[in-house]
Length: 618
Image 1 (tube, rainbow, N blue to C red):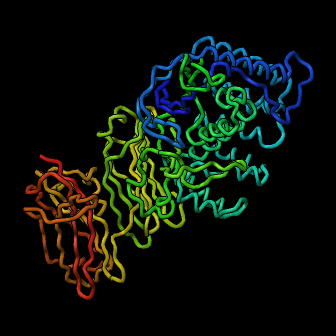
Image 2: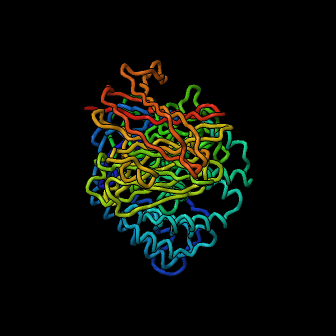
């Protein structure tokens, strides 16, 4: 039986896999790593080091601490069990005896590095155990001392760089390694079949290895999968390749879960490695031993001595790869499509997936599993309180965001970075603004090509490992075949005069869409294509109550509606007319509303712009 459960260990939170097997299976086999060249000379040979590694894994298994208990299972990916954010058992500290024994193994591997720097098994395991020991700088030095021919050294260097948080060189080094691989190897390393939902699986299955369209599909996934669009490099992609690197190291020297003696079922061992690719590899271990625990029986008679192994993988973990509706049309996505904690998985993928020539059997009534990633810089990842608006400047869009980080407690007291990144729908490319040492409240402005966009507003405190984010699609207000069009609405706090431009309004822009009923609400907008000679414009601003009925939102007039109607004349000498109104919303009760602006000019239908607000008091 395989289970996952989430915990916190050291400064990093984790989730655990739980496996039950008989104690009699506690052993380790020394596998031929394939292609390993025996060392010549010196006091340590590859064979000696392999025996030392086997002895260490057996010693670790025999001396693992017990867990602190576990709760019920809320999520069942492929009939296993996973806690993404709950609080089941806390990972116990690793015993000093295991740490000391690992250091002995590392001294053996250090000596072997001098004797056999070209042996793949030796270099892999030295990097692996240095990283496991919490010595990432030493792991990088060990990887750089690698002299194995081919691409193996590059992936080990990139792995160590990724674990150090150096995502830019990690990304370029992984790319260099991929370029040296055969087409089959490269397709396997780049493959995302274990990470994507069923709709994307159907699209991906039509793309063949080596096709440029398949590579473009994978690149598009990693472009949008980034947790922070303002972060240098692509840590989501390098995390995938780091998991592939660990997969390679474990195939060459299995751990307690994938060893063929401890786990004689090859398919089960491969399945565990697949879950490592979906959730990350273990960073800590615990074990539960006893008589009568669920496990394999000996001879099928009576109670057996058995065990459950708890390997802890990183958490809090969030959705790794966006869903199909996002990737196929990012500018149409809303915040719910980007939600960080998806619904529980039950059963896994509902369509066949093939890996290493073996089909992963789907469940008949499956809710697709959701692969997850725990960015080390985002122990907290929460929605950002903000307001956005989009204005037109020729063939460019002016996207503005006002934000408020004060309501996000994990950010409190941290040194903040604020960023706004937007990307066009058809040709993804970052257009962004990044402010270091940012204030807790502020505004960001970015220019991008006019048209549908995906927006990501981000405020984060690296020293607090806290991130607040708002990500969804934005588009100009709907209008087809009209001369006069509208911008978004920008809410601002009245300040004694009406703003004549975005630049005037922005310092007073509300940093939230939640407003108090006892305050007047300022609304700024722009009309485009108006007659420079001046033309009559009928302006109507209405507030509509938004209510949810039977799972859908409907609009209805409030008991005491707020309606403002004025006859206006467009700006003289310009084809852009900037206007503002202030409305009294004191008659409104708490709830969700739509602020609806309609502009009527001669010769065309009425154009409309809308913006939601929430009345929260007094």
